[in-house]
Length: 137
Image (cartoon, rainbow, N blue to C red; front, side, top):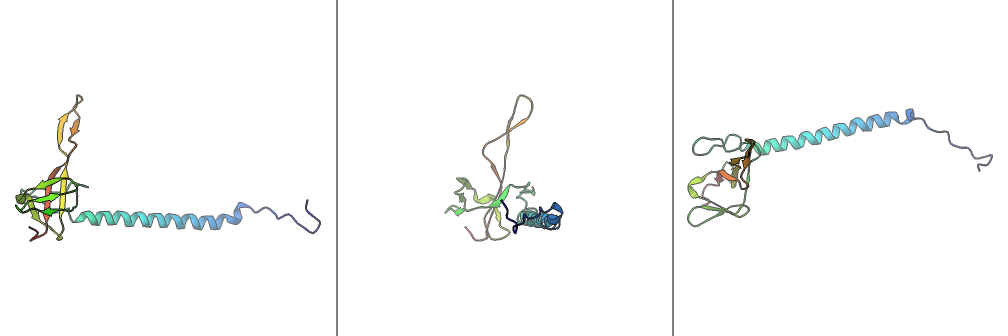
């Protein structure tokens, strides 16, 4: 099959490739760790706006992942309509927005307890806090 002038290449050992594999492995780990760190810090910074907000009674508005910016339409009576949740927020519930955008904080209430004593949560969330930009009404 091979002529006299043709030579079969010698097989390469794994040791020949080890330095390149080693560099690529640790380079990829560093890249993944950097991306994960950036994603987590952005999520924490995005949620920081809600960490100190309180309702009119002094209760915290946010309990984790339950606050977010929303689209709201001011109504003539001073209330606000939230088209995404099809909810109307009374004017007296609106608090001044920390960043001139509309924000909605929700929570799920326990509807009842199952036969083992565990909570059964309602399907539809309740409004905990609503923030509106000043002069939006």
